[in-house]
Length: 331
Ligand code: ADP
Image 1 (cartoon, protein in one colour):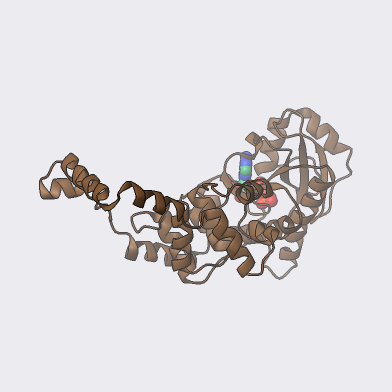
Image 2: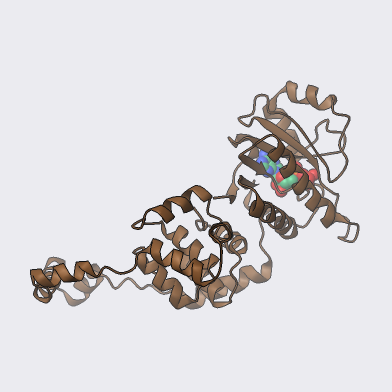
């Protein structure tokens, strides 16, 4: 998945580069900076001393020393005063400059902490939004996997309003829909095998062998065929579609070349979101891959919430899924 939000300690990330929320001296500090220097060892500080500091909004690169990452990109975020002192521009610049350096060194995987959101005081929900906006814009033009690493639950906040709207939607729609064989059989006091045997007999009665043969010849359009048809109908290019779906190019090529490809549910939904399908069309597309949206599952209700609001921004959806501890959309 090109952009992923993960909960982790950034010093543990095995990626090409991790980004450090440094200060202008580049000589180490507290928070994530202290943790990175501690894990990297004295070699990192020695190299930082040769760099002559770094201006706010800019970035410099060093080796990763004892870290699992090959490089550390040091960027200096703005101290947040009141939002009226160019803080947003400077924070955007931190992400842009760091990504440009990573690209220059051919990094394929990069992990960011939420820059400025600790001691520098940038409100966490806004800091996250800046990170997502700049990174997702960069990924439209570049192939890279970028992680936003959230250290602790408290460090992660989507806007209160969105969180409470979704929580309310889940409350209104969360119903236990498990009317499966097991429940049916206990309710009706009938052994499960008996119900299943009945069903099987009914199915057998429906088809003679010839029937079955002709049915098999009319197999419906597959997931892959429907996806490609919808991309054409929407006038999108393949790249526009998989990028908007937060799916990487290799996975898309696999789906394109294998007419019977069976995607995971989050991947199938990611495409439905990218294509801006209605709820009915989304259900149709999911059915092709053997899935359905249900009200007994928080993940599904959150997806339904966004589609019903006409909000097809996959990164916002992923923020919300992350806040509710659900798996994210994409590969
Ligand atoms: P800044 O001075 O730019 O605000 P901080 O280090 O104080 O930098 O905090 C930036 C963010 O990094 C905060 O959200 C904090 O929770 C987070 N953070 C602190 N330690 C780690 C770590 N080891 N891995 C990832 N994130 C971390």
